[in-house]
Amino acid sequence: MNSKKQVNWWKWAFITLILVIVVGCGVVLHRATAPAPQAEMSQTTKANDSSLMVELNRKQVNALSANYLDNFLKDNKIKYKFIVGEKYATLVGDTKFLGTKVRFAINFIPERTSQGNVLLRAKGLSVGRLNIPIKFVMGYIAKNYNIPEWVSINPKKKTVLLDLNRYSKNRQLKYSAQEINMQDGQFKFLITVPEK
Image 1 (cartoon, rainbow, N blue to C red):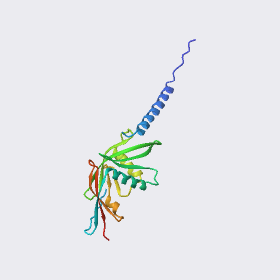
Image 2: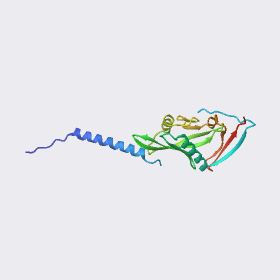
Image 3: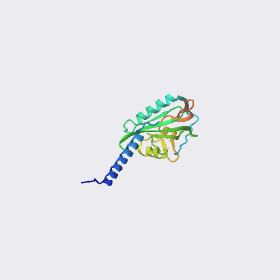
């Protein structure tokens, strides 16, 4: 007796579909976890105010940024860093994607505004090896991350405004960016002590 077993194509199609889903999720998860290769306020200085020009190098700006963010994010679960490199100022942080920690980095080109603030223009993004639009990630950061009130994120324009005038508003010292030279790593700020 010659008995042939009949192949159940539905069973094999189902197993193939499950394998495609598992492999697809694995690829997305692997790429996501792979390492990463605005309103302005003007403020005038009065003639009887005392001012001091402060010049910082890249290392000093990074130390100042790290100190501020460590204090600002002390009780936060989500941590991020702002690092000034030779070509870009970079925001680096971690977020959760499908239950896995994913590192992101956004590169900015900083420039001084006419009001003495700092405008960061986004030039590059990496989220693992995924290609995600900068506008989407900046919008996500603006909605889900604890950002200082003097920092304004505009996802549509791909900019971040560091409003030093707003930062100075309720402080005894007033801060103003005077020069940002990424190439030489020199950053000049005017610090003003208002007369009372």
